[in-house]
Length: 236
Length: 188
Image (cartoon, rainbow over all chains, first blue to last red; front, top):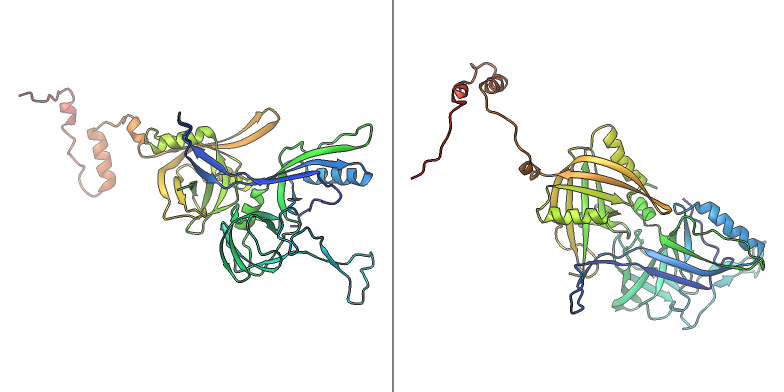
């Protein structure tokens, strides 16, 4: 099943907020202000794209086409979860995607070149469904993999503390739980992580026309955990 | 313990449905069963707590966020085979610091499905589909009054089934004569 990816260059938000939503239960707060709580859920991701600027015809058409494709909260789309500010770039600063022509310096007929991520990190060993610890091997990237975001096949993860470092293999805690088994040696997306999401509301992508033909729209998404369950059970 | 999962196993005649209370991704237990995230309604959770504390003999359990396939499954059985009588187990699984299961889950409630009710509720602009499951367990018998009467006729009929070739059981033949007798406790 093909997954539509949000055109992050065309429909660019002015702010992208992506955060998992853990859920705890507690017996309430004492008079002293103490509230012991127990986590019962590591939560799905919620992604808010705020201030998506829409001013060209292409942007309007793309927006409406995605709206039609989604058709309310049941459709899903891979939404960008920007991480350029904290991604482990080898140089320490933000790097663009690497573009390479054919070896005779020619490009494809439409002028496009081969594209490669600036950061190259692969998984080390198989990471099972439901795991929260993962090993990864740095091929090209900063020597620090704690507190960064990455995705694998549109399942978004955030790393936590480093548990062990063995040469260029880093073992880190990740959250939320692994949605789909990550095989050994899989390329992890650190440059442009995405998250498979549903609209948070059926009417989330409604837009209008203003007199000055410039509009900034906010749209919220929540992770499509249903898809991951179906995939795990082999229902898709 | 910082983390736990509330699990619900529903054993249908030829399939088991595994649900956990939450909205994150699929949960895998120590045996490798994959649980689906679904939300117990607030009321349901209170009922579970009451059931766990032994105060409730029946457990009305409402689920929201179950997928079409699961809903179909339950509905299908309700229509054809009869999901009534399927066993339901509510468990609590403790998790370690890495949210992985530690030890066996604690079984908190076991019962049988007594009734199923699928409902659509509209609130504001959204509509919710819930499946309400009434679950009973052995303790339900505590609250029911037994209407059975020991009688000679019943006993003969029963013995005729249990042991057809033997003469009818006569152990209750004097009961009609004892009908109006009173049994009094001695007081010393």
